[in-house]
Length: 455
Figure 1 (cartoon, one colour):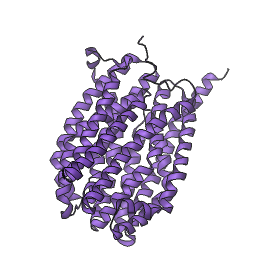
Figure 2 (cartoon, one colour):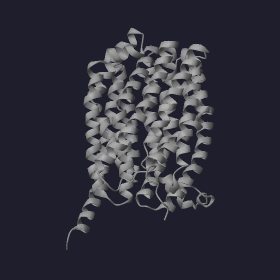
Figure 3 (cartoon, one colour):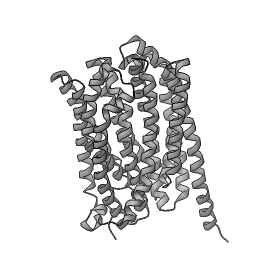
Figure 4 (cartoon, one colour):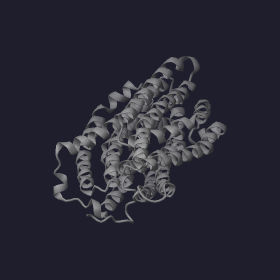
């Protein structure tokens, strides 16, 4: 049997669950926060260095970027769930075949998404009612970002495999280094070379290449996944299994992104101040829900390994720990949105009208943030058990609720409708995922208890 290199992988099926969860969560949180921070720094440098119109141009690309990259992230995470289950079950031959197939699929996905995004970018921007004053910068930024998708996807896939094996420290190291690279290049390209929004885009792509290189180099050091030529010779069943688990997660992200794009469409129709405000608010929401999102990613890795090992009681315990993390995150960060919206908005925005609009949006989402925090944990738990279909349908519910609320209320209550669209989407998705989690885990717990009970 292959030997496990203990310092490079972590077995979540043994030992203290709380210690495992926290030791995995903290580096993963730092990784995720740094990703958000360097995205935030991009926005800050663009906004303060190039003005509100440049900020709106970059922000306008956010939902499109999530549509394209979110699809690849969903696939990578779906593949990672099955890789983690193989590792938890100690099926190392299956593990290597699944990793090899993941790499092969990633190459094809990268080529397809790059082609589609570059070909249809201008049509998508027009459909989103992008203001003419923003269009040129949107295209400059978008062509560079999507032309460099290979960097983003390489990092996401390699990091997903590392997390599946219990390693959250290497992605942290990668993001620390790439964040520094990104910051230096942002300042160089924007303030010294004066490349405008193109400089921010190039800085992002180059820093992602650095992070991908670090993760891939670490994967090559792990003994149990040292791939041979035979590992790449897989039957259709290997690819189909990965795709069946990855596609629903990918579609969920893309469907959610479409809902966000519709919200962006309505917001853009009211002018640049609305677009700027929505950009800033979206950055803060993404930043402040990040700890709970990370708790969800931790829940996914922990659940996947233990589901593969049939340790269902540990999954229930892990749910409690991750929900507690989400609650603490809500108390600390949600209240900042409620009580300090003007201060937060002023950090990113100069215009008085955009700041006023942001102050309508942020407190509403801050009060309701516990909903999306819990959503991340329950949804990731369901996905970690290899059941991605109901979470995908919850993404459909999110999209429908966003579209209905924004289209019905934007004309009557203004920018607050964008906040209510987010909140309603979170509530609908949470209910579905709570139901799905209980439907899958409770029968397994009962069966496990009956097997252990004396006759």
